[in-house]
Amino acid sequence: MPNSPLPPHRPSLIEHTVGLLREALLQGSWVNRLPGERALSNELHVSRPTLRAALALLEKEGWLESRHGLRRTIIKKTPSQVREQPKVIALLTPLPLQELVPFTQAWTDSLRAFLAKEGYELQIHSGRRWYGTNPERELAKLTHEMPAAGWVLFVTTEAMQRWFWASGLVCVTSGSPHVGIPLPSVDLNHRATCRHAAGQFLAKGHERVVFLRQGPTNAGDKESELGFLEAFQKKPEATALVAEHDGTPEGIRKQVDLLCRRKERPTGFLVARAMPALAVASELTRNGLRIPEDVSVICRDRDHFLDYFSPAIARYGVNPQTHAQRLARLILQYARDGSPKTKQVRLTTQFFAGESVGTSTKTA
Image 1 (tube, one colour):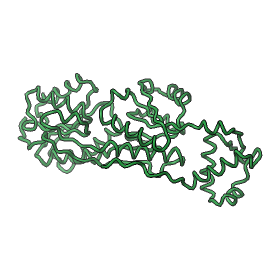
Image 2: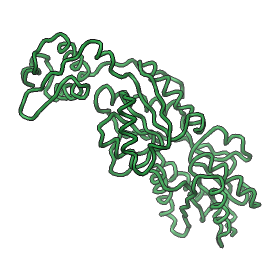
Image 3: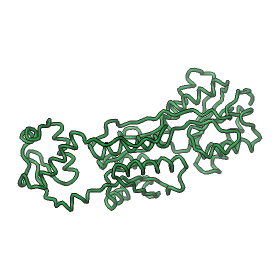
Image 4: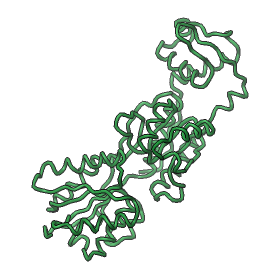
């Protein structure tokens, strides 16, 4: 996909109304309180819903204060305070950028470029302290000390997502939200991807296939599991397994060894993420199994270092610039308009066949 820049931003009617109101407030057009909504709607020639959305944004920016039954109170601001409104989008990640996989590094660089064209700076905050079971205090401290126009969350826990949803901060997840947390998000269509991958195994005669993921499962892995199992519902005589590892090379090797010692060894491995897929393929080879003659491997995710493994591992992928562009659009819509037009973006992946999927011999 070509690296096309974001289209020129055209202010929405809500943004236009916010600008008119903000300018009038700076000029002192009203004293102490705003006129009523009907009067303002007539004066600005906008609908009441548009006006209310604009007023809500101004309240969030600290221009106004509303109380039940009273007209909105004006909070005085100087021109210098207006210029201090943050033009920053913050990215929250558990690891420093240089320790993330190449695909993530690529879309992060593209996201920085897309945001810069729109006048925003990308700031990256990395650390494990926000990823614990009770992150509320640390997240409150971070967002207070490092204000941003919007937050992009990467590899987040359910506790983190719930805190951001309750906080009311502008926030988008790079990945799927957990059940019951309606945060806007951009992710790959993992469910469809894993359903397709399972179909690839079944088409080659594989009847004992395992989906291997890191535990505890995140929202995207749960979607992957659903898609994987759905494909096997059409062939009940086949066995679909779901196994977990702890994310370490040793933990992955241990799980592969356990699976290989089963009385009926799996003949197909679908692996979430590229680094674990590389570890799985290496361990299978160390166990004396040939890929794809004895066992087949598909990676759910693409990263360029898989090209250096022989035979080439089959995998699914999407252009990192596409991922970054959709993230940029979503977070900027949210930051500017107060609500994105589309809350859930799921990107269709492309299958790269590689050389790691062969016809099953159905031997134990």
